[in-house]
Length: 242
Image 1: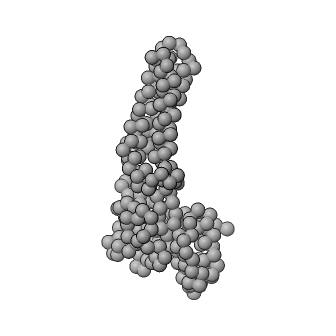
Image 2 (image 1 turned 30 degrees about the horizontal axis):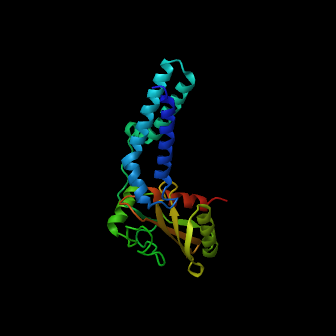
Image 3 (image 1 turned 90 degrees about the vertical axis):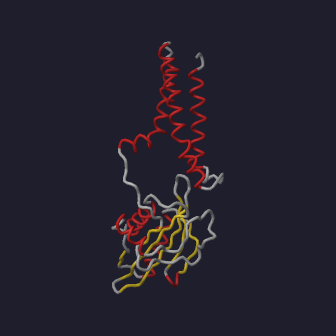
C-alpha cells in the first residue's frame, strides 16, 4: 500500500506505451495494420479499465492518508484511463449507425475508374480491385448519396495538375501518373493503424471544362467505416479552394 501511487504511475506508463504501439505499430513497421486493429479490439478497453481502476485505487488510498501529491498522481492516472475508455463510453452513450458493408467507393458507379498499375500484389491486400458491380453501386447510393463526380471549369490539363497538387497536400503516395491521359494512382493511409486505401483519379475533358472522377478501395475489411467517402469529400473540397 505504501507505494500505491508509484505502482499506479508505472502501470500508466506501461499502458501508454502499449496503447501507442497498438495505434501506431504498423506505421513503425512492427506489423500489418490489421494486426494493430486486432490488438485494439482485444486489449484497448481492458488497458483503459485497468489504468482507471489502479488510478482510482491510488487516489483513494493516498487521499485517505492525506498524501495530496500522490493522491493527485492517482487522479491523473485515473483520468488517463478514462481517456482510453472514451471511445467505449461514447459509443455506448451515443451509438452510431453501422457503416455500409462496402469498401470500394467511386464517383462513377456506372463506369468506375480502373486501376492499371496497382494490382492484387499490393502489400497486405485482402480485397480485390475488381469493382463489385450493381450491388455495390446500390449500397453506395443508399449510404453515400452525395458522392458524385466533380465538375470544374478548368481544362483537363489544369484539373489534372490541380488534382495532383491536392493529393500531395493530403499526404497521398503517388504510385503512377499518366499526364497524357490525365490520370494517376495513389495510396493513402489512415493516421491511426496505418490502413492503406488505394486511389485512382481520372480527369475527363468536358464541353465547359472537365470532370474529375475518383475511386478509393480499402485493402482490408468488408467495410471501410466511411473513410473512402470522407476522403473523396475532402479531396473535392480542397480541389475547389482558391
